[in-house]
Image (cartoon, rainbow, N blue to C red):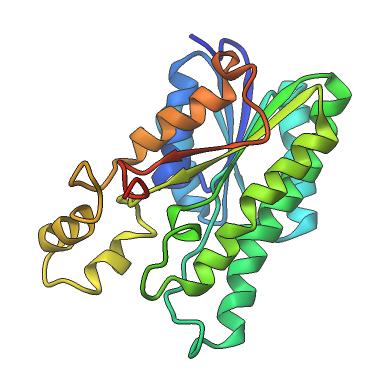
Length: 249
C-alpha cells in the first residue's frame, strides 16, 4: 500500500502502459485521475478501477491540460504523482516520411509531456512534494527500421526530465522510464505489419531481447510505480531502462 490516499494523474490511461500504471497505483491504495483522448476507453478503465476519475483530453492542448489538472485538484485537493504515458507512433523512415508525421508525434510525445510536467509541477511545487515519471523508449538509443521520427521524439524525454528535475528540486522528483518492446494497443499493429500472425510477430520482436520475449504492460508499470513511490526517494533526474536486456548487447 505504497500509495495509500495519494493521487496520481496518469496520461495515456485508456490502454497499454498507462492503464497498467493506473491499475497498479490504485491497487496500492491510491486515487487516480485518468487522461486520454479516447473517452470511451478511459471511461472503461476508470469504471474497472472504481475510485477513479476519467478526464478525456488531448495532452497536446494547453487548455485541455489546464482543465484536467484543475479538475484533479478540485476533486482530490492535491496531485502526488504524475505519469506521462500518452504517446503516438507513426512508422516511417527519416528520408521519406512527411514533415506532418514528425510534427504530430512531437505535439503529443514531447509537447504533451512538457505541458503536463509544467502544469502539474506547479501544483507539486506549491504543495511541497510530488513525483513525476515520463516515458522514453529504447529506440532512442538503438536504431530500428521505421522508427526514425518516433525515436527522435523519445530522445527528447530524458534531457527534458533532467531539466524539470533541476527546476522542481528539492520538493519534486522527476525521472523517466525507457521501455523495451511491449505489447500494447499502440505497438501491436506495428509488430503485425512485418509478420503473418501475432505469434510470429512476437517471436520476431522478442528475439531482439535477451529475455527472448516482449514485455507485458504490467511489467513496465511495476518500474514506473517504483519511481513514483517513496522506495525511489533518492532517485532523481535519471532514466530506468526496462527492456529485458535489449540494450545490453
